[in-house]
Image 1 (spheres, rainbow, N blue to C red):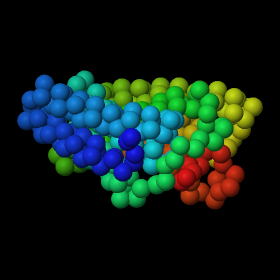
Image 2 (tube, rainbow, N blue to C red):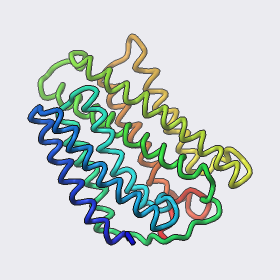
Image 3 (cartoon, helix red, strand yellow):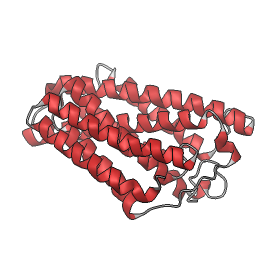
Length: 268
């Protein structure tokens, strides 16, 4: 039976495959980059499925378990961006970010048991969290592109307007990410209604989810203004991603959530 002690035997091959895929992408060997990265994703997802079966529940309860999904969706988002827009650097960045979360899970293991509190036994629980993890990964890729554009324009002394195609590609990612956020919030509302009898209660987690959603909506509207400043838009997107981190894990450390939020992650 697969346990969390076996994670390293799946994580290391997956990361190595992602690194090789990123190398092929950099060398402009697109087919090899796609295939090798996809195989790495399959290896990593095999562990998710195996631990799901072993725990007899979706591995979505603790922060460590959500990091597991994020580590999977980051290279997946990177692969999608690479296939769609051929940015040869994106697979290196998505692999690096995934590696950070994998290392945290390897060096700071949490207690993962089969117990699932009644509120988490809803049919809406798994779709809600999985959709949100995908949104975080896609918006993470958009943030990486924003940082890359800021770096390139600053290094070359060029106007960001010269990178118009990259700006449009980044916006496409934001649209997709916001769509996933919206669907995730709707699933969460249905879950809350079933578990606690109401769709929305302004719990600290829900409040920050709303703040994050409106922040990305603000970015989209600002980008569509004819007089917008591209550099300011990019920094706004970076700020949105920081708010997203507060919504995801920073909420656990806010005084307003201590002992009152039903969304803070349990360590056991």
